[in-house]
Length: 167
Image 1 (cartoon, rainbow, N blue to C red):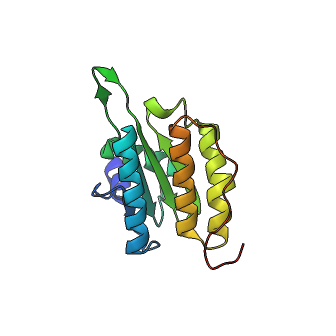
Image 2: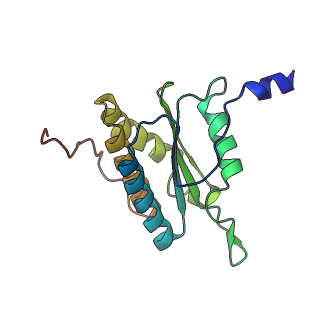
């Protein structure tokens, strides 16, 4: 019966860019801006951050699906000068499930802890998503992830949408 289950699992898209949106939530311009930001970070820091937006991870929980994605995508560097670094991170958004998860490689667990990841989601991304500001939420969340990976303490929540003049 495992074969049947496997056939019903959500497919994992190929890793063709740092930002993969299977929901059409982001415009090409928004995807491009995020892609550029993540590419610049990767060049500067070495660590690789990717964003994946899917409609749903059902029948799997988001935790199981995100582990499959990270296993398949092999984000980050395996090793540098013989040292294991495993410095990849995934921001996964299951839009219809209203679930989010930040999955981090072993090398980033010290900086981007579970508690920190949960705070970034709860305090920065979710409030913006609730206002329908999906790009702003993802962008602010990615900024927080980058700062934390850079070794800075988690900055205060970024819940401002800098657009349209409403503060």
